[in-house]
Amino acid sequence: GAGVSQSPSNKVTEKGKDVELRCDPISGHTALYWYRQSLGQGLEFLIYFQGNSAPDKSGLPSDRFSAERTGGSVSTLTIQRTQQEDSAVYLCASSLGTQNIQYFGAGTRLSVL
Amino acid sequence: GNSVTQMEGPVTLSEEAFLTINCTYTATGYPSLFWYVQYPGEGLQLLLKATKADDKGSNKGFEATYRKETTSFHLEKGSVQVSDSAVYFCALSDEEGKSTFGDGTTLTVKP
Image 1: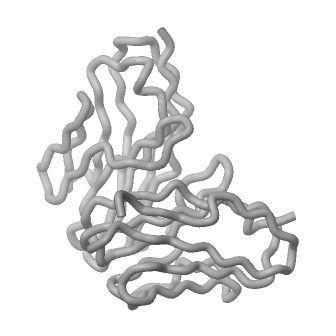
Image 2: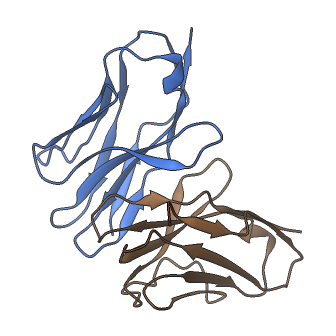
């Protein structure tokens, strides 16, 4: 596609519900990254994929967070039993490879009530 | 672990003033260094990058030099414009692929 696409753009959910956030990277990009940007704070690295595998999952805030990538393309970030502190903008980026320029999506704004 | 520390904001300048936003990093090996920018209402985008020591990245009048001896990648522009108002993020990607971003510096340029 023309750029990194994320859906939904906005998600409002109730505390305790599960949510799924989707990222469609730029075609041909092997690396895919997930970040969290809380209000007034910087980007918090969550996880990255090289192909379908995630070499380092240590950035995920808790075991309620998980991510997968299939076919070397689309990735899904799942948050189980959401909490209010999960409210943030979740950004996805893709690149041709690690240490290359990252192209960011517009993000998903998650609000947990 | 890796870390990126950048100058705290907000920074407010008059048009045509000189800009410096400091950035220092901690990382093992040979990371690539980046400056990303987020204009109001827009997504993050690359401003410039440098992949090895002494490389200078430049774009839109902005420059930053990869200084391994001081582990720094300070962003500079000789004459800022109102349209440069944005949030600027310093970042690194290490050889294992892990990315680390600074907290961002908000720049406001007044006419």
